[in-house]
Length: 434
View (spheres, rainbow, N blue to C red):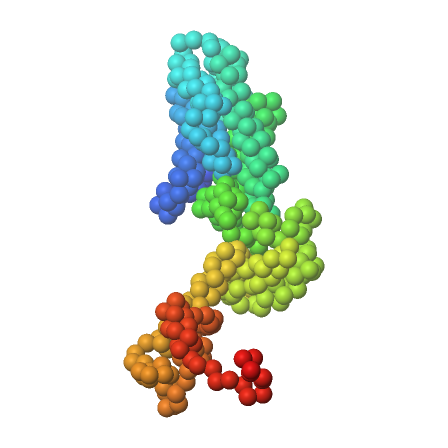
């Protein structure tokens, strides 16, 4: 059986190998910015574990201080990188200029140079020496002010990241709460490990943090494998999900509401209650049974739905995509709902206008071409050979309505004709001249 010191060295070497392989995978097969930040974070953990392995393996104070300095390359990088991941994940705008991040990085740089120059001052380690009474010969010291400043910076980075994750978890959509819970767990682990080391709870001043941080990245990577932590950030989902003008409804395999966005609530006010999540959509939208009938079919769909809202017609286009698991089983569906009322009403108005124009054009065409008319009586011959009075013909073949009067020329002519008429005497009346 291997002695305890060799088991610890072997564990640390395996930790370094695991960290480097994970970093290689992150850089080689993941292209997102968050994946690359995670890759650098894992490299920082590997440097920490690598330096601690050789610190335990050496026996002189100068050699141990050299490996301690190498460890601090990883130590000061881990906490800021972890905070960067949290800021990106929770959607903090202009995170590179975040004041907390800037301040903590500044402190880390100062403490790094303090660790580099330990033999020349007592600001970091006071009176460092070697203690060989435990499993390994280790460096013992009294903490200086910059040492405690470094502890504060690391703890602050982790706690600030944890705070951002908790705040985001409270307002995250149900689909992303599990993802954020993994990140909360991963943030708690290194804080506990560093606290245990500072309090000196473990025997022989053994630093468990290289192993603890490796376990942290393992938890993070497990969450990545299940929830794709570095591929689709919840904040990216939130910005698209919350700002799109289309209503989005996510249902599970039992037609229960899993997620929805503000646009869906605007289209269906019954969804505005905070208690709708987890309820069957048929119960929530019980006043619109036609909508439920439309979406209940377990198939992809692209249909139009007409309803009446406030006494006015309303049209929706519903697109549904099934959510399938790895076995091809339906786990639910995503519904994209767009309001197409304006477009549909414009189409109906356009179709009515086209029909009116076609009718008018047809009427115009009916009066085109040669029109047989009598040069004497002005009657018009129709397609069947019958002669019709001009008024009758136009009334039958158009929307023209005639009114009758007499023009000045005809009036004068008529009066002249009437004046030339001699009226014969009526024999039944007596002659007044007699």
